[in-house]
Length: 234
Image (cartoon, rainbow, N blue to C red; front, side):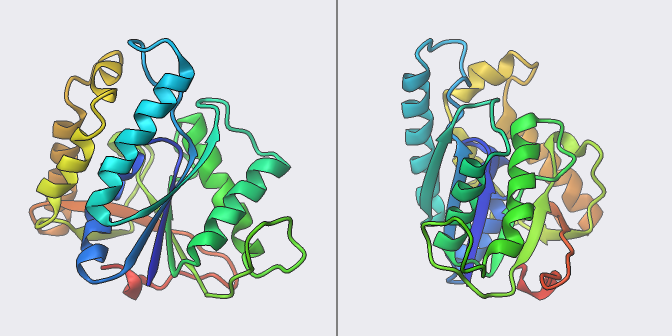
């Protein structure tokens, strides 16, 4: 299968779906990652937004190597992502580029503006995947895709519907987070001194709920023609 994760910023993948992607990789599936922004304001140490973009994209590529993933950057401005014809085409192109069997993205009720907008763009372009008259630079694809939402930070307003056991993958998941070195001082601005350790604690909490050591939690998207197939989860 082709597995696509669409996120707003570098490090979103590693925090929320990294263990699940590692399980897919072990099973021999192809991994694709698409980012709507490069997180180009995500630093109070660097002052040049182009430099922040360069650093964060390099960190993303280091982490993506863990999954053997192909990566696509859309490079919209951080915290300024809007629903426009251009961004709709970007997201549709990314989805068609991956020709996915499964898509993961942010939860629609995530309080982060870029997270919520990324989720909106993904789900609203889902029905356009096979459309031959859509504005797109990629060929239509006709697979019946299953779309799943990962949870927002600390599970705010999120009730899990399904879990993936990442007990064997958690240590490697954390390696992916530690590649994002630029974000540790920035996250400290929000009271988070080690967000990799907090990700481990949260995976342990979800693991307790699922009856295993570590887990990641998801909800499924439902719309006529694209109902979720839970059997595609690893």
